Length: 432
Ligand SMILES: C[S@@+](CC[C@H](N)C(=O)[O-])C[C@H]1O[C@@H](n2cnc3c(N)ncnc32)[C@H](O)[C@@H]1O
Image 1 (tube, rainbow, N blue to C red):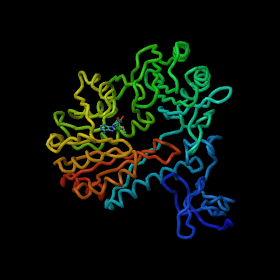
Image 2 (image 1 turned 90 degrees about the vertical axis):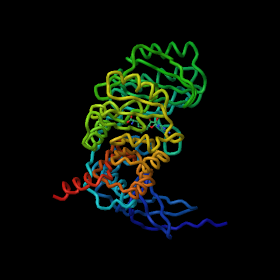
Image 3 (image 1 turned 45 degrees about the vertical axis):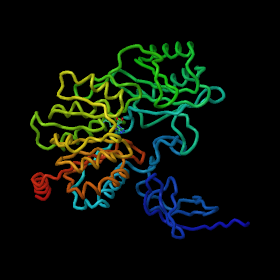
């Protein structure tokens, strides 16, 4: 059969969710990586695929990518867009989710963007290759790209990569593909390694020597995510501060992407609390190790819930002397019920990427009037917001936090209320 090929000239209308420019051709949307809205493209459609032959015009928002790996590495989809336009685009993603859910008369959002070289959490892929290993992020849908540079991560982490690569390439356990999670904690980098084969005694010795030489308090090994972990090397205590409380996070625990992003989230959450007495109860759902719990405990008594056993154990161990308590609970299987939620003056929730599902449904059936919702996924928000609107909630304020610079991800803090007095007060403040 003869293959047909058509050449067309088209203009990028907008960016799709993955950050690729969208053009229309024969009634269908096509996504062209590396292009920006308004750019004129010469394209060839062939075999159900669109090939970019030439970019015929340049968006005023196009910039030189700061990293020479940007075409290859799948970590950043939008390094070719200036940071102001990027933040505006992220704001539009959230605004669209709000508008589509019926929240139309909105206040102006607060906007925040983390600077380059601020990422404190990193998940890298490892791959054994002839003569060594590749350590880096995956290409889009492909093999990892060796991370020889990265404008995203903290300088301490960047400096660690070459000796880390050397140490890991000497491990007998890294026979094929593996991965490494790095959390830069106050006590130093906390490493969690996955390798296809178990560590030998000699591998452990190499990791322990590496940990001693580079000030790494703990290296943990596991065969795969969710499997039992073993300490491969421990040279000192592991700790991190949330507010002024010292916590010992478990290996590979959830940590906000950057300190600056964490601070922006914390400030937006605290600013969104209704007036509280110290005795008032704050219910916090999806609390992790206590990133928000301990700052919230300065404002009321916090009941924190979290499904990850190790995370909630570390939160609980740090509650001594604070006005917070933690409980382990899988909020999908066993959401807090309306009578439990009704004890709270305000509910703060920070669910995982997929959203809060059954827990939100239960929250909406409760009498809770004030909610602060932290979300890292506008698509999940868009699924959940219509129910909040229907249940009578108004958006008092919203903060868009770009703590995933050059990616398409965005964090939002929504302050919601169905307390008529608080809504009136916020409206009055906004209008005049
Ligand atoms: C986005 S993180 C937020 C953690 C914390 N608020 C922070 O800022 O560090 C989401 C948290 O939800 C927890 N989680 C995921 N699914 C859950 C479930 N079904 N029940 C309870 N917690 C869950 C994860 O373990 C994770 O700690």
